[in-house]
Length: 336
Image (cartoon, rainbow, N blue to C red):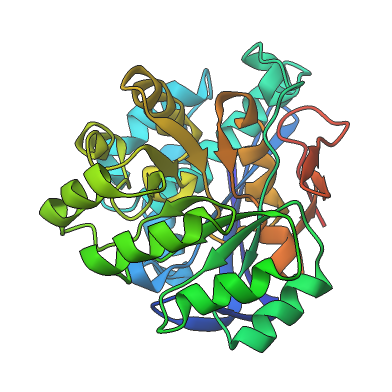
């Protein structure tokens, strides 16, 4: 296979703020794999919380370039199994390679990726649209600027209940709340009780992942369902979330790609938990890959391209929350 790396720095439409940080630019890395006249695209994101930068991602991939380029792709799963021991400390990089391998594999069969898996897309969930932390006035302004059926609201301020109350005055849309580990037990329970009457569907990662005892208490008493994010990074975390959360949010970038994500989905469902996939602010390359997992999912947060002022590719389109697949084989992503 031939390997090509494309680093990008894409601007956000608005400063993107969560409980931990703010940013105006999203660095990304797109990987292209080529074999037998076909090519596949994958993507991964820079993320300071996990100490992942584009230079580090490129360095780690280039360290194994000879092996990757000397590999003849049979199945993406076999490639992932071969590379995992080498990339177990950088699953972000492995994700980009895995997505590219899945795209390439499906293109060689002349099928969309979900068709390769034999999935029915007629009941796909709709994606939310994220409103980052800001002043109440600015968050209301962002909501009005982008009418949408489902919103994910980033929280972690002293005004969290007031924010949801203010936003509710301007829309009947479903709300999902993401605190990114910002709350404690009492705050989580208090907010959950208040949010239930305000049309909030669930709360994502209210408390730090390390606070297992606190999450047990919240799980038993919360008025709303709880979805794990920072508490569920890799396959080993799925079973640990049972009894702490009602569902898990799988990020392809964090877990190492589609290959482990499909196993995580199956395990979570076997354990009776709901399943969601989330965004790391990927462009249309990574978002197009996520789209093919939709038939497996209860919820999805794949609004990365909607938040960015720039993009890397054409691919899936998102219209009023609905995902429209590109009329091309593979994931449908085509680098601009």
